Structure formats: structure tokens, C-alpha cells
Image (cartoon, rainbow, N blue to C red):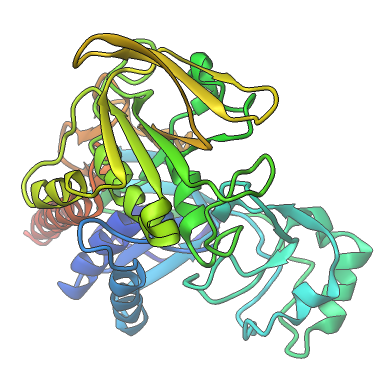
Length: 428
């Protein structure tokens, strides 16, 4: 294990999504020493995988680019990617964090020229498109990736293709001798910002996800609509590549259900409302969106966006919890079965594509943390009882991007107060 220089006046931020980036930046810009640890090769988290934000329908590049500029300019901030926190020991003001850093096999000499990717033929499922396509085993995660460095997948690191990638690089950036490293850091406070993951839609058996090709999740649909996604922005059926013009959006897919997720995931309604507009942009008046819902939860400034969608002639709302989905054997169209509670009549409606507005589940890193860290009934973290470990963003509760940023700012201020008190006590 390698010990890295840090002090109990430093703050460790675990997770490099929008919440982690915000918390790290706020603390660093207040003069605190911050270590930002992200277990994937790039910062940005799931926000970087959105096509557009709601309700303004602007692109995530707007917010991420500003944050990336701030990150690059701040000397109080040290960023560790491919770094997973495996253990935190100690108490407020005096923690020891153990991190495991996976090899990237690409060093700081990388210019992101792409020669290594051109030299290899092997492909892997693309996690940034939720496995909807494949990418080269030497890859830049996505256009907004930071750091702007390629990654070699471990599957080719010790192979002839790894050697070919190294030979193709003119800058000596391919380092096939990189090994996994374990480091220990002394810090005074921890901001836990590990974010969320989509609930496993295959567990909702009546909806046929994984069995029916034309039943997908809302996060997958988001990537389909993105011009940098697996279909170049074309909204197509996975089964046959034909245009999906008649799309059903099923709300509360896994959320508000004692058999799955007890909580409301808060973003799902707005995500579906937003995605109906992707369909309209793609197919104009030929688009047909149907939202099957229990109730629409669009609060505060989102109410105006909801009303706009309600007045869209291409969008229809059906108040119903869909009971099950079948598949037409000839067309492979999903057929939705249920009861419309406004009028109370049964329906069996065919659609080109079904999008499950999937719920948020807290991302579990597997780290060993002090026993006093409190979780709620859904696994979201409330923080340590003594205040030394603070939850931020979606690690704390289901939140949209705007509220996640607000939560992260508050968490950063609490962490600053912890290390300030620790320093004052030490110097007293």
C-alpha cells in the first residue's frame, strides 16, 4: 500500500458525477485541499450521458464545460479516476481512506489522437450507451470525458493487440506495465457523492424487459435520442431498426412499489415528459407518445413544462398502472394490457416501442465505512452521526440535476465546517 500526502484538513469527495464535482469545486474554491475520487475513467457521471436537461431542453455540455474549466484551474483539487474507495476508518476530523486504483494502461502523455483505437479490432459493450452498442477496447469514454485520455480495456492489455496499440502511439502514452495500486489518505471529512444506478428493469417481470426487444428503459431511450448515441440520434426499434413513431412511456417502473423500490424517484415523470419532445422533434406530427401514469409529479418550475406537454397534440395521457406487456409475434410490437382508471375500461394497446421510466437506486460501491453511517430504508445515505461523513446529491435522496447541485453545495459547506473545527482544535 502506498501512502499519499494528505492531512486531516483535507476533504475527500467520493464520486465524480455532477454532485461530486460541485462539492469538490465549492470546497477547493474556499481554499480547502480536496481529493476527488471517481471509480470510472472519467468525471461527469450520469449527467454526461443525458441528451438534454429539463425543462430548458439545453445540453449537459452547458454545465459540465464550466465545471471542467473550474476543475482544471484549481490547484487545491487533486483528481483520481479509476479510483474506488474500499474502506474508511476513523472519526470526524481524523479519517483514513483506502483507495484501490485500477490501471488505465494509458499515461499522461496521451493526446487523445485515437491512434491506439485504430490499431485494435476487439470491441467491448459500451457502458456509456448502456450496452446498446459496442466500442473499441481502446477508447475515449465520450466526447466530454475528463481527463481527455484513452483507456485500454484489461481484456487486451496483455495481448498482441495491446502491443499493437502501444506501437501505434507516437507519444509513448501506452503503458502496459501499469498495475493496480492501493493507497491510503488521511482526511478530515468525507463527502459521499456516489450517485445512482437505474433499477434493474428485468426484475419487473410483467413488463418483459430483456425478453421483448422493443421494451427499453428511459436511460436507454435518452442515448437513442442523442446524436452521439448508438443510432446517431435516430429513434429506432431495437428489433428491426425501423422508426419508432408510436411510443408508450410507462411511469413508476419499479418506483413506489413495495416489491421493488418503495420511494418515488422524482425524475421519472419529467424525464418522460422531456422524451416525448424528442419524439416530436424526430417525427413531427407523425409522432405518437402515450404516457401511462399513476400521477404526474412535476413540481415548482416544472409545472409549466408539464402544461406545455399536455397541450402537445402528439402526446396522450392514460391514467393507469400497466398490468402487463405481451408481444405480437408477427410485428414484435409490445401490447400493453391494463385498466384506464378514468372511465374504468380495459385496454390492449399496441405500440412500436415501450419506454420504462425506470427508478433510481443508490449506487453501492461496496466500501467499508464506519458503522455510524446512517442509511434510510431505501439505502440512501444520511451521513455519519458525528457529521464527519456527509452525503451529497443522489447518494442522499432521489434528485434532479438542479437539486443535486444544491445538495452538493450544502454538503461541501458542512465538510468545510468539520475540517475547520478539526484544525481549530488541533491548533488550540
